[in-house]
Image (tube, rainbow, N blue to C red; front, top):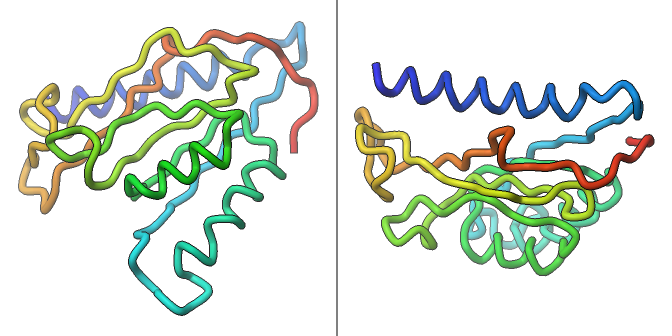
Length: 164
């Protein structure tokens, strides 16, 4: 029951956030959002799918699409570091799922700093103890962390009228 309530609250909050960002008719605002499964950094070595072969393409794509907000999955610490360095126009929200909050995978949300201001953030773990990092929940094979990009986290700074 707790899990269902948590998931419903998180999804509802995200929906309200997106609706709030899209619903500014006086400015005819548009919001470009994206999602990308980063995949592990160690797989496919020696192929075009290896992280070292595709990381530049990913950063180029984000810049070309001029995304305002984008979510990522399966982001390892070294991948997160590369993206932060390569995409300085974005701020990243979300912690890694390890008990120390910096190791293992993460599912961060990145937002354009010139358009939004972070006024708060948080992460909860999908388990019976959502405030305790690194805990596996409900028969999961590994811990799962979820950043909380709820409406109170972002405040509009500037509205653009064009989008890809």
